[in-house]
Structure formats: C-alpha cells, structure tokens
Length: 225
Ligand code: NI
Image 1 (cartoon, rainbow, N blue to C red):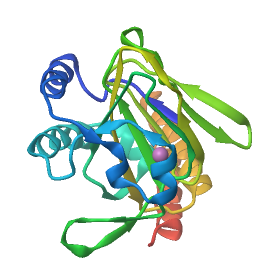
Image 2 (cartoon, rainbow, N blue to C red):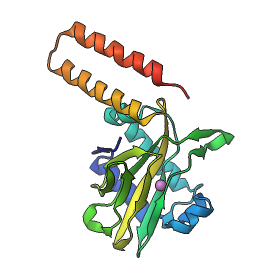
Image 3 (cartoon, rainbow, N blue to C red):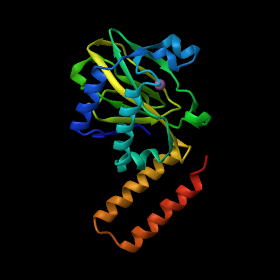
C-alpha cells in the first residue's frame, strides 16, 4: 500500500521543527547504512545520538499518535525513533531496499514492515528530490507538501532523485506493524474506511456492528510477530 497522509504536522509544529533543523548540525548519512547502502547514499542526517533528533522525533511521534488515518494504515506495533535527512547540491540516494531488521535502543530489534517519509520542505523550495518507489505497477514519483507523509511497504525498491536546487528536508522512520503482510494491511484499511463511512451515513447499526466484528477478527487472525 502506497498512501499519502496529509497534515501530519500542523503549520505551527512544522515551523518549529523547521526552525530547529535549519540551525542543526548535520553529518554524513552513510553512518546508518551498510556497505552497499554507503555506495548509493549521498545525503546528510542528524547524528544518531543528537538531542535535536530525540526532541524533534518525539514531536513527530506525538503527531502520529493523534492521527487516525496513520494508525488505520500502519497498525503500528514498534516504531523506530524518527531520523532526519537533508539532500542538497546534487545529493541523492540510489535504488535500494531498506534493511529488514532494525536495532532498537536497549539491544532489542524490530522488523521493518512499513517505511514512512514525512516531508518537511515545501516542493517549491527545491528541484528534484522525488522519492521514487518501484512496485509491480511501475515507478511512482512522490514529492509532497511540507507536513505530509508517504507510507509504503519496506519491501519495495526505492530511491531519492538528485536535488539540483535548494534543500530537501525530511523525517523518515520504520514501523513494525501488527500485521506483517502488506496485502492484509490493505484489506483491513479498506474495511476500516468502509465501516467508518457506513457509520457516519447512519447505516443499520446492527450491520455495522457485525462488520466491525469481522474487522477485529481478521486483525486477530492476521496479527502476530
Ligand atoms: Ni530507504
């Protein structure tokens, strides 16, 4: 599932995050990838242990927690604390697949099921910098307004096109979902949206209740690590 979720950060939170990032110290993005990734990754990131990353990541997580559409799509079990990157001066990231297993603080690990990019620069601030996601339907180019998020399967090949003017600033993170299979998450997302819509339209409450039961029983069947 490739899903655009608008308005994760409201204008005041976005302005605060951008102000902090615009005066932050950045480091080479190769630090958080393996040997193959280092050959194709040309960008800047906030250092892993940076206090700014911790603080701004918490703001992003707070905003996500309040967003029902995000929850319905990702069904999050574990989330890696957000990282922040910056592409400028031709910076790019060639085609790659994200690592399947991510280290969490405290020595535990999580599986990456869902990848998320939260755009923090407006599209007219930079040229290039499209997130290009390749799936069985072809290639999708994504460049969203600041504050909007794209959610896509971690199993997909993707790249970031070279930034030829200005700077592309984003947050990115991974989610281990309660539901491992992307196709199952999509079915649950569609069912959830239909139930919400039927509920709002005043449909027969007993029928809505039975459908809600189906949703939860499918979630029970498909969830598990
Ligand atoms: Ni990636």
